[in-house]
Every structure is written in C-alpha cells, then in structure tokens.
Image (cartoon, each protein chain N blue to C red):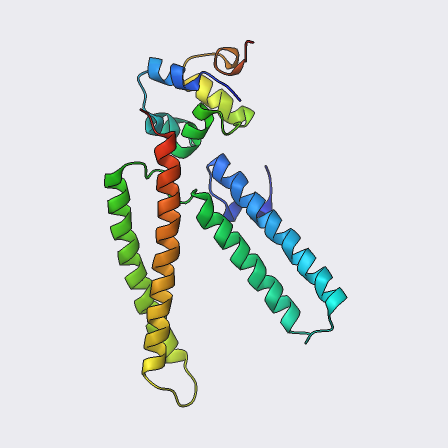
Amino acid sequence: MKTWLSIFLPTDEYKRQRILVFIAEGGALIALAQFLSLLIGPFESSLVPLISIGIFVFYVTIRYISSGIEYTEVATQKDYNKERKNIFRSSLSFGAIFTVFNFFTQRGDFLIIEPIMMGLLATLFFFLFSWLSLKRSFNKNRELMDE
Amino acid sequence: MKNRVKLGRIKKDLTQAQLAKRVGATRQTIGLIEKGDYNPSLQLCIAIAKELDQTLDELFWEVS
C-alpha cells in the first residue's frame, strides 16, 4: 500500500495494517468529536482542537498497547524477563532526560520538587505503558509459538 | 484462512523466527498466518511459498 505515512510505519505488513486501522479509527473519532462540539458547543475556540488531538493520541496509544504488536519477538519467559529489564532501563533514562528538560524550561519561581515529581510521574507512566504493551505482546506471542 | 504453512515450514526444518526473517516479516505475523488469524498479502504468500519450495496452491488452496 503506497501512502506518505509509510515512512512512519513498520515494514512488517500485519503490524503496518493494524497501525493504519488504529490511525483511521482515531481519525473517525476526531471527526465525531468535532461534530459533537458543533452540536453541544460553542466552546472556547482553542479547546476543541486540543481535545481532538488528545482523543486521537490517547486512542491510538491505547489501541497500540492493548493490541500486543509492539514486541513481536518476545515469546519465552527468558525473552520477557530480558525485555522487562530493558524497559526498566529505558524508563529511567527517559525519566532523567524528561526531568532535566523540565527543569531548564520552567519559567518564573518554582519549587525544585516540581520538575522532580513530574519526572517521577513521567518515568512511572512510561514504564507502565511499556510494561503493559510487553505483557500483551508476550501473551499473544505465547499462543502463536511453535509447540 | 486455513493453510499448510506450518506443515511446509516443519518439512523445511525452519523455526517461525527463521522463516519470518527470510520473508521480511515478524515471528508474530508467521504465527498468526499459521493459526489462520491473519490473511497475508499475495506478495507475502509468494515469498513464503518460495522459501518453503512449494506452490501457492499447495500452501493456501483450501480443499473441502
């Protein structure tokens, strides 16, 4: 399938198709949200696109995580444990970078604890989402594995 | 779609991961095809058939 989205999509055709479906469903939800905002509104003009983008990102992310297509090669307990360690390490790295970035982009007076708390929350969510995705992938792959 | 990919793969003494690598797919995709939970594109069907030295009919034609 030729589309300019190809540069963002994986090469594996199953994974590619699934992601395209999630994006299409997210797009349909945006259209629905816009339509409802016309019926229910008027809202503050900047609020509608913000909520629409939020719905899209949240929907596509949740569908991707729950579909179990992220970790396609994790099918044994050994692979799972190894990948969980990798996720833990990358969560810590992400958290550290996020905290430093947040610290330097704060404006005006702020408590030192604020960027640290934000960093901890970001680390926690990053780990949680990645771990859930890993767990779903592992369960899915186990069912498909060679006997 | 029912198919005989798993039989063909075992005959060639390949693991799911090995076949996946050879046809440019993931192990999960091969597992889904073997289980009949995913209908591959014609392009992928041909790639699998070539790797397993079988025809499309032998692998994918459903005989009732």
